[in-house]
Length: 517
Image (cartoon, rainbow, N blue to C red; front, side, top):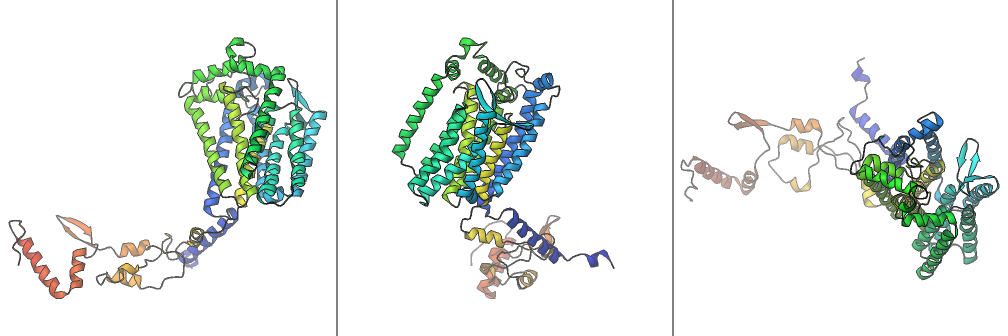
């Protein structure tokens, strides 16, 4: 028995490929392409930013890690470990239906974990510069306020969606949820103190309330009071007040309070347009404190120049576009609010870090999302991406005619090339001068399918006829020209007379038009 005898037919292979592709699409996607496309692009951009962050962390921290830890890759190894944990958490957040996460049971369980971690920070936490923000869990040192952002995102979206959009809860229940799920975490974060994270979460709540339909006049009054309160708290604290004064004139105390900011300016200035080259930073040689953490954007500007910083900005802009597409395609108000709130968290932290490094806004101590070193930060960023992906995966918009047509497209079953037999359109079926081969191909029975297959490669090659084109050349015969087909439809007598006239015109030695009869 030959190998060709046991080999599956081309029809069976094509059918197997088609069935496998459809099943794989249903398992992986499960939603129309217009919904899945922004989800896939969002994941791709987040992965690219995370990989870029590993490269920049190694570049910015290698000197410090070698001098302090004896291993140039110490920080990048730890960041990679946190990324693995963050990816696992993000997958869990993406797989669990956000409707369950936003239910009373899901919110209660998350509230117990997050509020418990925030209380543990007050009892047994560690910190620096008068702030207690970290909790040691085995070999890991976590910052619970980063995970509180993800919890408040889900809780605020669920509460606003239930009350303002779906009207499924009453006012007392709404107020209880706001106090328990938003007010308590904010208070515990503020007393650490962590004013940067408090401001980020407050802005998140404002955006969710604005998008859900909260009374705009009342909302603006609350926003004004929040700004005044933030100014009072910042100016009351000596540490925060010094940051504001440093922002106004960092060069007034270049070697003390303005040291970090001025060295960041020097890093940007030495980078120029294209930078000094990846890994060639000078400021990372203990000139710029926290080069791999809060000020990694300055190292990006020094090594990759203005073009590198603009590329990072473009990546976050693309991330925002995909997140807003996910929000637009969400099947309900909760999903829309989660997607909008999630990208609000990422963009707010991004601009806080960038504006602080550039000297436009007081330094907040917030790392750059996906790029700065920090285990809790990268895990929370990946979990936020997982929440947005969750919305896309569980979107159930009605299927359109375009989705049905796309789902009905299948591969041909005749050839390995993936194309089938030709189908003659109604507009061309009346042509009497069609080639016999084409007519016979068109008369073959068509298989029932929602798609219109093209001609197979074998049939296409078989129907080509090479004729003499003159001057020693050959050409492909494309059949009668339009004029000949028109004469053939007008009758044999017109065709004969037309042929004689054409013959006389072609025999006219002068090349003129000839005498009309």
